[in-house]
Length: 572
Image (cartoon, rainbow, N blue to C red; front, top):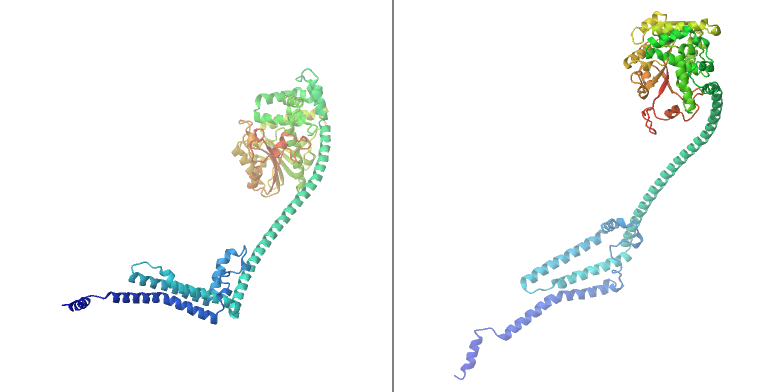
């Protein structure tokens, strides 16, 4: 029984594990695990130390930290290159294919080691272990060593150094090319600016030349204006004397005003007064307007030579216009009443003479449509080889012939005679469609060169009738050289009297061109060929109208209508 205790103890051990054995096993496992973990890094550290001492210069002499392997040289870093630095680095990496592929393999190796370490420690143990410090240490140390090798080789290997120099030259060439392109663009902009400056300087020089020539022209115009003013003073001397003498009397309705104007005594004869009494009693406004026109020519006798006009006008219309002219003179008006009639008459006289002179064959024909109290056949020497046709109302032509007869038989007017080669009066109403037939029956020949005179007649006709008259004249002018002289009112002028004036045209030159006339010349009262020294005041109404566009109907300064009278010469 005494020896049973040891045997009993040993029998107990046979049923379990010995504590000392457990300790031995645990210590062995701990040593193995420590060797597994610490061994590889220690091995690689020793191997690196041995390898670096034999084949690679010490890392302390390497300047890897100061200059990265794939960095852009400082010589290429500037303002213009920074925008393309990323592209330059990418190109540099592509050229260094060996270094890029090695770096790529080492980066992949780091990722593989990290992944295997995670799998091993997460599956074998439940405790957390910073495997990124254990396994990647070896890879990262190898990568740093590789970078050191690349830096050293880049400096001492001729091939690598040559490749880097080539890359540097390529990048520098690209930079110089960019700078050259910018310099070329800047030079182009400078050339364009210089060209524009030269053009502008040329324009300024031209304007300066114009101003210089304009000063000379203005000086010449001033001299001509002074001469015209002197002539105007001479022309208006007689009317001024008449005005001053008349206003010194108590009344201007006395017959003495006829003496002041020095008019013919035949005007006050019983026969002439009887004829004008018939005019006042039987004629309408359209027919009586012929006497108003004659009155204007008579009272502006210092400009218009028409010795018969006063007798054709009559006392009533002479006195009416004379009173208006007197009042205008007292008011210092810029336009004296009747000046438009005077300017219009002188324009028709001058253009009629120029047209007859342009004809090659003789005799020429002159047709006065709506002749009224016109006396050109008795006062214009240019008609000495022309046949004159006067077309108007029968009763008007009859009274006119009677008045001219009284003038002819007057002892004081014995020198009055017809200047035209022949005068034919055609009794016809333009408002009827047979006037052209009556004209041809009276001896008018369409194939003969003709001057058509339509003075103060068109705007009294309805629009349709006026157009028919113009078209009939244009149709008869196709076979031979003919000239049309006419005056037109614009729309604003016709509005002066809705019942009296009807036809108007704001663009008569365009109208006549559309009818087949090849040459059309338009003038306004006050133009150089339509003032005759009677409109020397630069502030008169007609000069103001000429400065405004023809399309403008209202004066922008005072809001008054722009009333215009156009004088038109047209030929085929």
